[in-house]
Length: 134
Image (tube, rainbow, N blue to C red; front, side, top):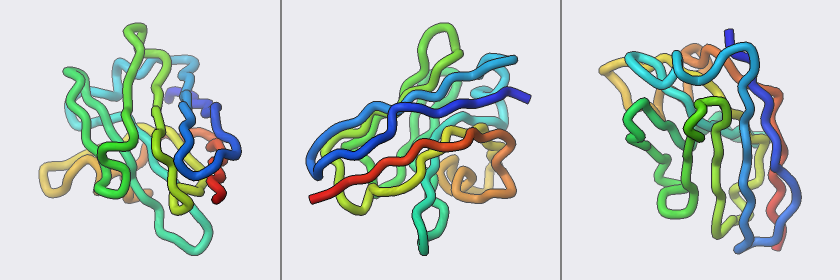
C-alpha cells in the first residue's frame, strides 16, 4: 500500500488560489494510475456528502467534478511521487477537508463517481483543510 501525505491547505479569501500537494512514500503512484485504478482528490465538508473532485490516469487523461471544472487542475510530476491540485477562483462552497486517494474504477460509473464512493477508495491520506472566506 502506498502512504499518502497531503499538504498545502490553509485559509484563503474567495477568488484566491491554493495548490495542494500529495506526496507518496513506500511506493510511487505508478501502480495506481493505470488499468482499473486511478489517482485523484476528493473532499469532505461537515453535513455534506463526500465529493470526488478530480482524477488522472497513466496517459494524462483527467476528469473533474462539475463543481470544480474550469477552476481546478490535477497533475502528476514525472517521477510519479507527487500529485497536485491547483485550485483557482475559490468559492465559499469549496471549504472542506481535501484528500488525495487511489480508487478502483469500473465500467459502470465515471472515475469521479467512483472516487465519491468510500468503498472504492483503496488509499488516502490524513487530509488538508481548505477554508475559504468572503
